[in-house]
Length: 282
Image 1 (cartoon, rainbow, N blue to C red):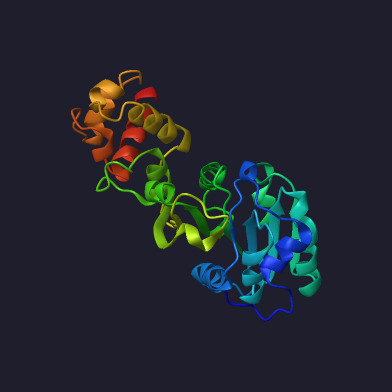
Image 2: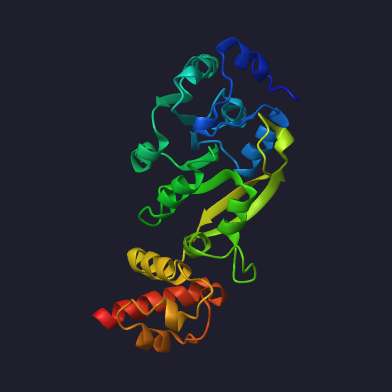
């Protein structure tokens, strides 16, 4: 396990000193290898002059890597009160550069946290809320307040985020939302052995960059459309979309074969169909 030259104790000592055994109820799996946390920080790009928001820092391994990489400020959101004292020790080592928020990341006001500084979100997300957090960040007014997302997910979730119709079994609502609003890719994978305790699955770091030229579409309509279509993903669209007003005319206007199945339609096709459905109600 590599060390960061910040004068702070190794993470295993921090965990012992503060009694920070990972809690399954909070989806905790700690990264203790600073080679890995430094790699995640590098994946986020140059951090000088940037604010970084980190969800679920735990004992602070990634936090320390982000600060060592030059982040102007790191804002951590931690629900587990046991971790606060360990994070305060990091704050003392980096005066004025670490802000600790004790609370629920699902209730945080990210627009306010990123209001006055270029901001990136970098996190080893708790497995039990990772997808919900990502969807919230993708639903923000566009362009978003964040410059990039560098996030850890279970491998199966990461594959759904970056999927296209070429990956039929993984492509769905999450991939369409992420593909519409961002350029997403899997940066690298991590084996269970990289974590304490080791999870039962492989994990992946995903990088998402917001698209500067967004295909025009109403978010609420696109989400309604994809929810309806993928609720019966093996059925033809002429069957799965029957509950939507004007769906037949909309399919024709969007140039989509009514016998196509949803997993074969690209993001641009769903955007066109969502716009055509809105036009039917105009």
